[in-house]
Each structure stands twice: as structure tokens, then as C-alpha cells.
Image (cartoon, rainbow, N blue to C red; front, side, top):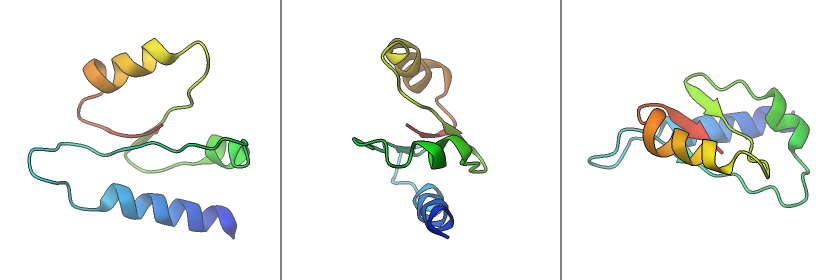
Length: 76
């Protein structure tokens, strides 16, 4: 299934070894045409916080990535 392939590829990225001095992975997913909006909503990646950017949560996401969520992996 297509969504299984996406999940597998994302988990490969999150499970890849971290470079020196890095503590987490942050993967930015740009879906300009919202082709995968339904898939992202249903993604359950172990150890990864899935964050959907909206027009009203930019500051909250920036705070999460730079202050509050420094030890966890994130898919934005």
C-alpha cells in the first residue's frame, strides 16, 4: 500500500544514525497540493510527534521545536 511505503521511508529517516552532537531528527514534509493530508493525519510513527502547520500555530510549533520538545523526533 502507498501509505505503508511512506511510513517505511519516514521511519528509515528517523531511525538513521544522528550526526555528532545531534539529539533528534526533525523532518519537514512540504505537501504543496495537500495530496497526502489524509495520510499524514493517520500516521502513527513510534517515537515521533507529527505536527501539522496551520496559519495560526506557527509560533507554537517554533516554541515546541526550539524550547519544549528538544529531545523528541518531529515530523512537521
